[in-house]
View 1: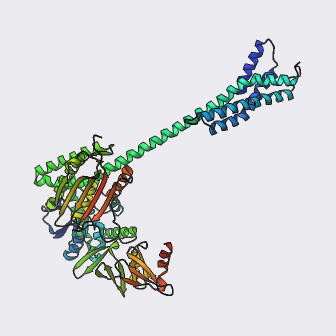
View 2 (view 1 turned 30 degrees about the vertical axis):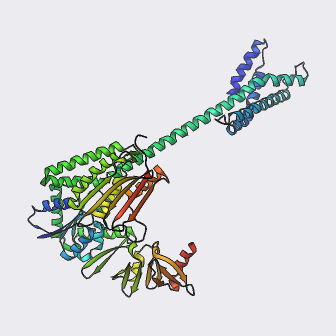
View 3 (view 1 turned 90 degrees about the vertical axis):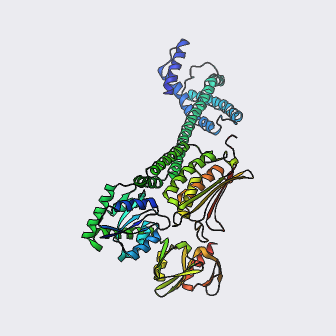
Amino acid sequence: MVAIFFASQTWLSAMYSGRTPSFANIVRYPITDASLWAGLGLVAIALARRFPLEHGRVARSLAVHALAALVLSLLQGWLSFAIFQKLGLFAAAQMPPARLGALLVLGKLHTNLLTYAAIVGVVHLIDYYRKYRDRELASSRLEAKLARAELEVLKMQLHPHFLFNTLHAISTLMHRDVEAADRMLSRLSDLLRLAMEDVGSQEVTLQHEMEFLGRYLEIEQTRFADRLRVTVSVAPETLDALVPSLVLQPLVENAIRHGIAPRAGGGALEILASRRDGMLRLEVRDDGPGLPGASPPKTGVGIANTRARLEQLYGAAHRFEMTNRPEGGLAILLEVPYRGAAS
Amino acid sequence: MIRALIVDDEPLAREKIRMLLAGEADVELVGECGDGAQAVAAIEKLGPDLVFLDVQMPEVDGFGVLDAVRRERLPAVIFVTAYDRYALKAFEVHALDYLLKPFDRDRFQAALDRARAEMTRGGDDGPVMRRLLQMIDGLRAERRYASRLVVRESGRITFLRADEIDYIEGAGNYARLHVGKQNHLLRETMKTLEGRLDPEKFARIHRSIIVNLDRIRRLESSFHGEYIVILADGVRLGSSRGYSERLQRLAAEG
């Protein structure tokens, strides 16, 4: 194709100069040119890949390409001269072959330099397009992953188990205490709304988190009748602090499930927040049986998810500990760097 | 008269079934339980004909209850669940009836009617009872290793999590489970216990000793490839040559 393209050019230029070229020659010139570039082009492509014109390496790459362009162009000129001579195309020439060669090489130099530049240009174009597509693909994958993680958070907070049990509790209350059923339905709706708002935001203020928790605890208190006693003590200066969204609820749920629900007499739950040495300190304590034995604690999905999220958000700059309290029960301690919502 | 028991960890959920049962002239409510351990004791003591069994409960869940109850005491069961794909799959596979929370009177009535029909027709070895037993066996096989052992001692039923056990001493057809300062006698041989416990966590170091690997503090080699195993709380156990291979491998792993 390239050969045909150039053949037409050769034919036209021959027509200008008033000569009628033979068909064989019209075809031979460009075919030789094109095949030589097909070979030398591979070198050019390799060089373009090896020395891309990228940010930070432009000067060096340009120097390499300038030199390579010159060398390859001269080489192409000389090789084509050698081939033309072999083919006997210059039989009618009156000039000495050396001079003819030099003229041909120099005459082809400009086209050759441009050909080299075009090859490097096209390679860059193709590579950039590929990179762009890869990046696009990677970013769409990342987005999907993030969306999945958010969905997991939502599902984790509003466990289908929690949701259906709450609805079931409401369906019981309806028969005996319509007001209480009404209240619970309204708390559940608040909870769903807040959870939906939080999807997509990694961090919220502690105040927001406590609002969510308040709704959740109200429902749990109704579900467990009077068996759940809750004390909340949050230092006012911590309300503005940023915490991972919906971080406390799984911890509280864990405490209720394992520390309070299994006991006929119920139990007490304490939620504390304070600021200490640039860290926000959150604690969830229960007075249940605590962690069993000396073995490492077996934890549910909620706790595992919490750990993974904290690791992702804060790396080494956080603490997460579950310990048995000396007076009995489990204490979950969470420390994250203190950051205000305003900053 | 059908003697019924309600098992659910949530008071409001128990209340709902109690309320719905109040209209049934042929059903007598014999008890209510808020957790799995209570439920096992109540089933064995009261021998109800029918149990409304919540699947998700902390510590010992509905399947754990059925697993622990003596086979001959197994009642007819109507499973109650809020949401548990695993449980639902098991019910579908074994064609067992269940109630999804929240349920209404119609749905409840239908489940109760089916249970009634089954009880008058099949009795103790009706098709539903057989399917229930198959499911329990299937779940047990799937779990492979016991996470919990049930100990019955003079009218008391204790649930021990496998990881609470420090070591087990065998004596004939009995095994003594050492748990901290307490110990419990279980009617099971060392061979069956060894098979039921996860080999990643327990090793038999002697014909009559199985030890929880987490509790091992030190090994002291005595002679002929035998070891003295010293537990975290200072208890010393002797290994015997035929059983010390596992300990040698553990020691080699560093």
